[in-house]
Amino acid sequence: MRVTSPENWHLRYLGKPWAGVPNPPESYTCGELLRAVHLDLLGIETPPVPAPDARVLKDCIDSMLPGFYGLRPLPDGEAPREFDSVFLSRNRYEDHCGIACMTADGLLILHCQQRVGVHLSGPGELLASGYRALRWYRHERMDAALTERGWLHA
Image (cartoon, rainbow, N blue to C red; front, top):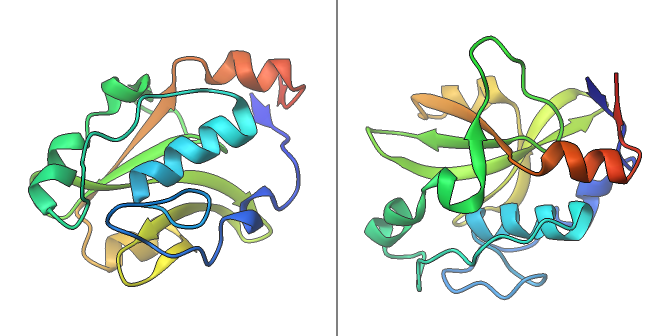
C-alpha cells in the first residue's frame, strides 16, 4: 500500500516553536504535534497529551503511551509510510515522538524538539544524534482515514 497525500502538507507546521504548555497551532510539544497532524489532515481525534507541562521530563515520559493514542506497533518487517508515528528513546524510556512525512528527500520525520521547534529529520540523523531506538506505530483508524480521503492505494 502506498499513500498519496497533499504535497508539502508539512510546511504548515515547520518552524513553529516548542512550548512546555503548547497552544496549537501557534506552538507544540512533540505529542501535541502528532495529535494536530492526525486531526488536521486525517480527522482522527485522540486524547490530549496528559503532561500538564512538558518541561517536566517525567511527565513527558509518563505520557509516551502509544496505545493511549490509538497507535499500534507496525508488524516486524513492515516499512513505515507517510503519517505513521515514531516514538524515540535515548535511554530505556521513550521520550520523544514524530510523524512520517514523504518529501523530495524521501521519508523524513516531522517532530518538535525543545529549543528547536518543529522540523524534519531523517531516521539516521536521529539515531546519530543520540536516540538509541525508533519504534514505528500506525493509528488503528489510519487506513480508513486515508481511504476516505482517496490517499491510500494498492
